[in-house]
Length: 121
Image: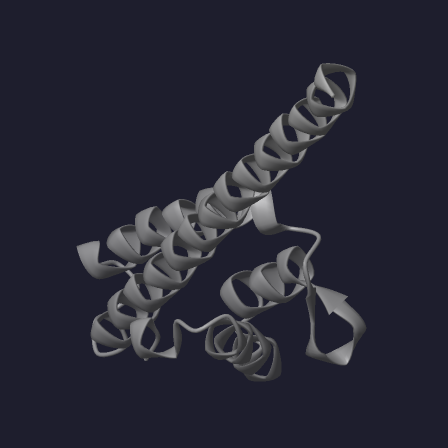
């Protein structure tokens, strides 16, 4: 009887360890997505606020700094797919560097799809 119990206990320990690790990975991914969507929303807010400023004003410097934070937040998620056959990295770059409104729509939709639509503008 003891010989049968040991392998079963070992299997239970391995399975429990895997699900615990998977749960932590999912939590980390969720936190990364939330951080990205938060940074995206902050970039949108800074950009919109700077829209009334002249290019020489400090508002544009602030937008660049906020965009850099969004790019950093996007890095661990860069290969995630978004609408239109693009990756999150491609869409983010197009939205922020090229003022591509379609790309911006894709990254906003991405945030909506992962449950953080309220963080974007």
